[in-house]
Amino acid sequence: MKFENITIVVAMEAEARPVIEELKLKEDLSYCPGMPMRGWIGQYRGIKLSLVINGKDPETNLDLIGTQAATLATDYAIKHYSPQLIVNMGTAGAFGENGSQIGDVYLSRDYVVFHDRRVPITGWDKQSIGYFKVWDAEELALKENFKTGIVTTSNSLDMPPIDEENIRNLGGEIKEMEAAAVAWVARLHSTPLFCVKAVTDLVDSGIPTEEEFRKNLNLATSNLKDAIVKVLNYLAD
Ligand code: ADE
Image (cartoon, rainbow, N blue to C red; front, side):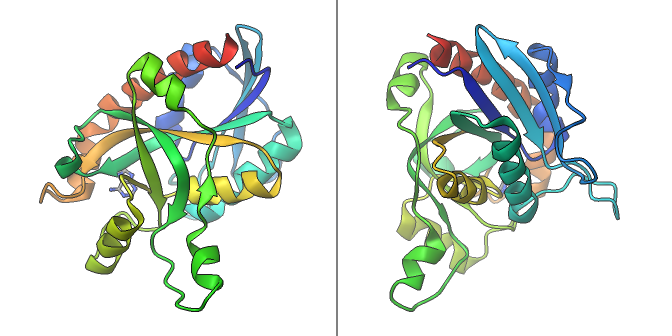
């Protein structure tokens, strides 16, 4: 499948940097002026590429993470770059009991959901979870040997028992903090989307997630960069 205009949506600068450097992207100061979000642009094998990040919180000077910033970044990116496809890239937790390993790269499968929205009222229950359909990346996953999984989102790094129960009920395999928000905005704009997520931590390992996340961030972001090059080669053909 040939795509000519793709936007990569990422939360943290550390997740984006290896890709920006590998693809020699240049900062685009006309993206989201006056807001923390930042954008880079470039070309790769005939694809017009843009990459956006959430940017830094002006109060703490730390990377903005989570769904609110991702919503703004995605909406502005779609209006500014009019992509044919959005790739939401980032790091995530996964379950060791599913055979996941630190550093694995997963592509999203079927749909993206929110796992922390509990609204037991008919209609709003499903709306809250989202079930945002993702672009079918099965052929790409088979070709490049990526694992695939249902991606599930909340605004928390931890996994209290109620979230774990919801993730299990939803068949969630990849736990992160932005995808469902990005997918919601993409759906509002009728823009196809899929996710590329590298595993920094195993949520069932018993080791504190923040410890595993910090320890494995470099490995995961390096694997993400290699994965994105394979993804773009596939999408360019
Ligand atoms: N990002 C990386 N690991 C994560 C986890 N376990 N939960 C949410 N977001 C993450």
